[in-house]
Image (cartoon, rainbow, N blue to C red; front, side, top):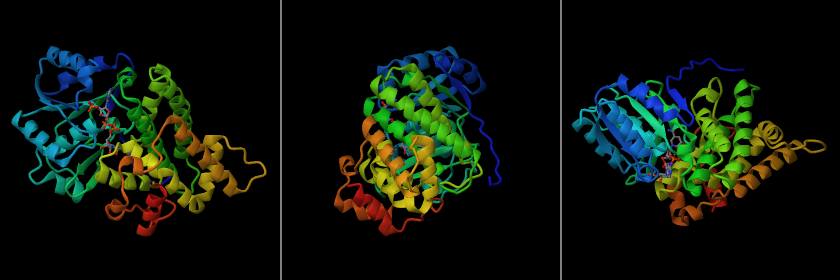
Length: 388
Ligand code: NZQ
Ligand code: ZN
């Protein structure tokens, strides 16, 4: 049975090859001073920067630049962005980049006018926002996180080895997002497939929880089938518009809060992945792929019915003459073969994890209780060791 819920998603989307024109419609709604947030320079190489700046200028905006947002944005960078936003008396933040840039822009938007330390308030204490928020818009250039249509943001504190995500309500969602699949064509293959698995993991971590037969499960199975189909095409031909556009749309739906409504969720793979990220600064999607098979094989017996359903509905496993366990195992085998086929990292050693780090990674992993099995620290260690 679906639980009670409120659903609201205020982010307006402009999708397709003409999507950037949406900026002309949106920018006039906000004040003159715009903080233009971007990463390490990919948007300058592929020409998106020039297109965006031209539109900002055409709309009479004064641009304050905040470049150099790194993958897995740090708390130090957040403090820097807050200062820039305040010094420039910024009215609006435009993020142009992937999930890191969008997350960071949202973090600056709630932190710039925070009277206390935003890391303590929003990430360590997980409090809600009670200070003014600077509105944010996103031009997405890399697909995976869903940050373009949610209130999530993940900030890393390399000193304390903590990578913490806080998911806020719709008051923190971007006001709009520009989704042009062509903008993602220049993403390097490694990042591209990492993003594909990030999408898959978002869906699976909402799917593998609860025993009800609900609409969300059917939606998620459809999203997974579309993702699997299109990602195989995109890996062979990264400029296949049909595949890349379907993946972009799937990524947004995978984590724009819809499919989690009225049901419980798991999120343990993300918790372990984030902890690995805090220790290694590894690419987010790869921290998930590297531990997923060990995790799902561990919890499969506790959620056997769902794993059986997953095998049949998503991987087309033929159940005839097989036990539930055989069917479920075959589904996971198909998933593993697919992951290897598209080129994902399947062990944490390749991400720079060493034996000496394991204890610390276990300690900084938050334990969630919505999945089929609440993991003990020993079981988290088991997942890590099997993923070495
Ligand atoms: O920095 P630039 O030069 O832009 O290069 C980036 C970066 O090196 C590059 N890139 C992006 N678009 C490109 C491109 N290169 C060429 N052409 C393009 N069009 O790709 C690299 C990775 O970018 P990044 O933004 O870090 O990747 P992603 O989108 O995977 O974001 C990862 C961050 O999002 C967080 C992760 O933890 C991580 O910090 N997440 C946010 C979530 C949310 N808001 O809900 C949920 C996710 O689970 C995730 O945790
Ligand atoms: Zn993710």
